[in-house]
Image (tube, rainbow, N blue to C red; front, side, top):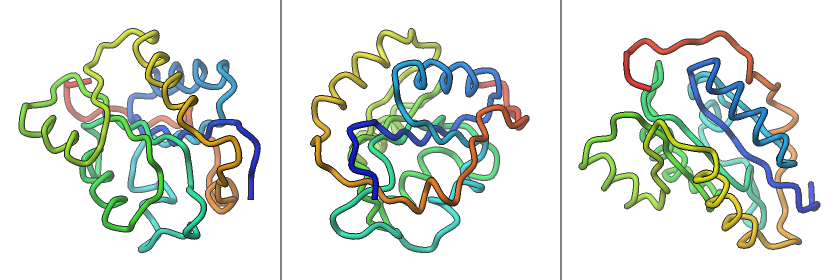
Length: 162
């Protein structure tokens, strides 16, 4: 189990350029980033249950796009919540998030970012997350073992929305 204070982020974004930019910016801030172009290939989605023990989480942050192939970000978060995922800080990004989906995202405890957004807005939220993460919290090793860095994988958007 990892016990260092490095923040682990699961990033779900199907636009390769944006995924690469976000992954690079987050890594420059010292974060461990597990990036996926499609939620259906993310180990968190592939497992029928949460593999984390009661006292650990897979990640400190899940940052997901809304519109992606196979499954949208809100469906992914709903599935994680149904599995009792222990990740406490979740954000959804979208260029087109209707009011009812925004309300549902907030009901699920998600921070909502409208695209395009400027990195300082995201970084301010991440600063808040960092101050909220307990220095001795435990992260599960299984996610790192089962995922490769796919920040440069070539899945692209199938719709015009960002």
